[in-house]
Length: 387
Ligand SMILES: [Zn+2]
Image 1 (cartoon, protein in one colour):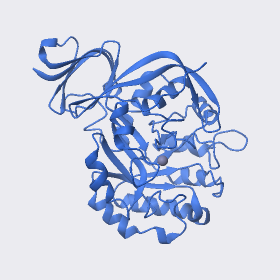
Image 2: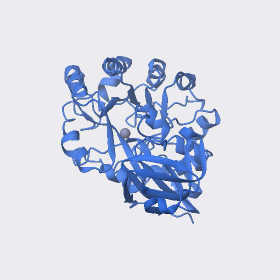
Image 3: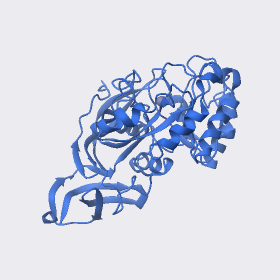
Image 4: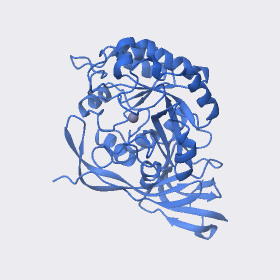
């Protein structure tokens, strides 16, 4: 007997190379079985998933959920379970001086599991642009914060924007990398400078020092510091970084996604490793909406469903070293499951410069199952219908 039986869905679990009509059984907070034709009598609660897509619980690799503290942050469950996403990673909203609010006020309110990157700037992303000078960096404070929050903090965040990065460039990147490595953690680097202060070539310098497991956010940004050279070709350091194991995240958000850059990179085989949304209040009802919408966006750009599921399940689980617990439906893993529906219709998707594309397929969130608890999705907003 199982507590929950999800019957008849198309189960896609790239970690196990599964794609087929299968049933998923849950006991307590763990996956118990994935098999063909488990009898409905075996389930206390049976969820009919016929015509639906069943995946390991989706993981949003980059969003901003420092709710009520960082003004543009969303609640973790808005980035998370309301869109059938069971785990979210905060992309460095907090620094060492503000981080304590995460475990005290944010994590206890959320049904969604939250992991965090700690910003190199003591005050995180409040105010922007951060890091005016070295006074905003406190390495001892960072070390104490990481030590006190092991298991929550998954790396160190730095944006290639602002005064200090403009003046001291790669030294700031190396400082972030050094403190991260003291704890065996990666760095998360934001490229794309809307203020056009940071030399465009810093992205190349930065890519050259990034190592396997480090994360490049906004890989398809069209802003200054983008991976495209003025002649429209992709900087060679990007492919080399990808081949070394640097993780590439589009982290679409509002300001840092260009269809043009994405197309050029995809044409050269530079695919996202993970699909973060960079979700925040500026883009929740406008360009980004949710992780399922961003998965759909990459399907509209030519990737297939299995690829975008891998980029939203096992790949981010590996990036935050949680793959023994989440990112797959192997028996014994956390009972985190996402149920989605691939709807047909006509929707408009828009990038930062304002280019629109139409898509005829949209992944709609239906249900999240988080640690064995069934939570119906409540999408906050959807892309506009195409005319
Ligand atoms: Zn971000």
